[in-house]
Length: 418
Ligand SMILES: Cc1ncc(COP(=O)(O)O)c(C=O)c1O
Image (cartoon, rainbow, N blue to C red; front, side, top):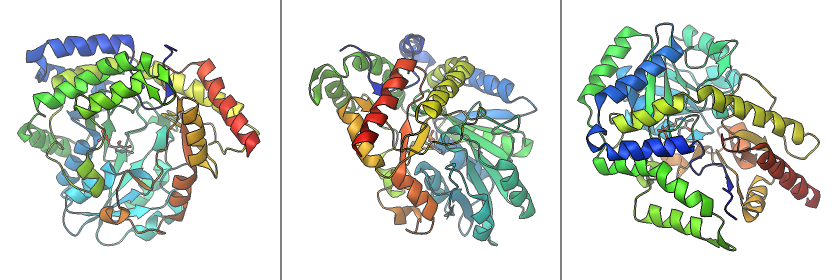
């Protein structure tokens, strides 16, 4: 009864030491915006990427992408190629610059389809954003060749793949510039946060100057993010305590969100392509501390995710779900499977207390209306098919082998009834 639920997105990276740190940061009221903490996170990232790469922290991945596009001079009349099967934050950053997102279809690895990429390039195209979805590396070398041939900027979206490699080289180091996310569901979490990574001095200096002119988010916003790991550590142990659907943990979650002590990952206005004042802003020092602390766990977390992925890969053989090829260089932020009745299995699992994921159940998730983010229905058929059939299985740090076997057994049981 007091077991934490199997839940893919309820503060999945938080461990007791992260909660203790969040409490400490919360209490150091005059340190919330301390620049030394931001610099410390950036130094950690610089050391990790090495090879002359330098980082700049901001308050989210979408802020980082927006600043990158602006700095590259992308604006009205320009086109930026992104993949369908993505988060609304990605086309929004393009739209906020006044440019047009142009969608390419994806391959069966949930990543940009190299074969259809060149058809999308025209004289207005200025950049390609490459997303390594779920931490599975995109075919980045081939994409880079196309970018170089057409003199386009190559931006790596590393929101899902921090710690991943492709042919031995770190993801994030192939393009002109990359960005990370430290969102609540990402490889490492500061609830909100992101960073730009580049070794181009000119771009670095321009973005540094832009960030210097930005404001910090409000104290209330920082408070919300600091409370996130703390409140989840209270509500998760009682998440299933109650009768049927009515449980104490669910009530607390609803209540904390309702009174706005907990923030949501995407704001209502963003779902219709709208820009809110909060992006871009500087990274608060206290959140930088949380991210830096999580960094010490990067290898352990990713090793764990790989082991879990291996268990799913072996355990789901012979079932109706389609699993991805096992790749030991992937990060496996989530383990994506495909099946015709993904929505049905999602509900079946939920009724049994297992909260799985549906990134991305719409080609641009969670956009309210695809046309507002410039997506034409039918234009990326494989992405649309994947969106209909995808289900994400959890791989997060707190998930143990028994949990994985429960998920596998649940899927097998469901398959028999179909
Ligand atoms: C693929 C991808 N790119 C970028 C982002 C934006 O990151 P953030 O939430 O830190 O703004 C997300 C976020 O959810 C994402 O899934």
